[in-house]
Length: 127
Image (cartoon, rainbow, N blue to C red; front, side):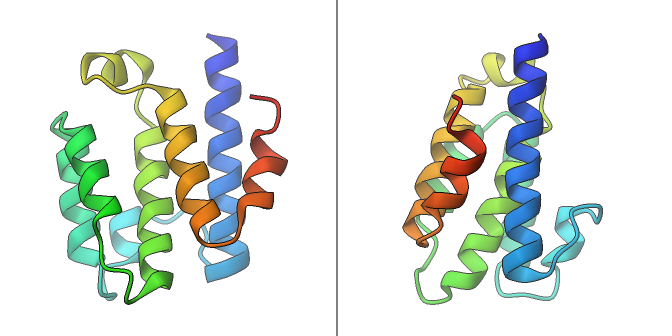
């Protein structure tokens, strides 16, 4: 249990750091409100609803299918998506065929796609 809490904190802090450095977003605000006025605000809301309904894999697939036209918003949306998913407990994740390790892998993939892999490695190198 303590190990999972540690992993959850690492993920939260990594996402929080990138959001603050790149987008000047403070993680204390609810995710839906952060993007409500951007291109992917409604998309994020739908993705989070899918997660809450247990359709995590489908939501992640849709996330990766987002248009590359507005890379900034896709990265922002992905970070907020994984931050929301990271708040779910292990029982919820397991029940819905997902794991904390998949959150880490998804984050590493999306962050590396945007040339920020060194940040991910700095936070997640111990895993």
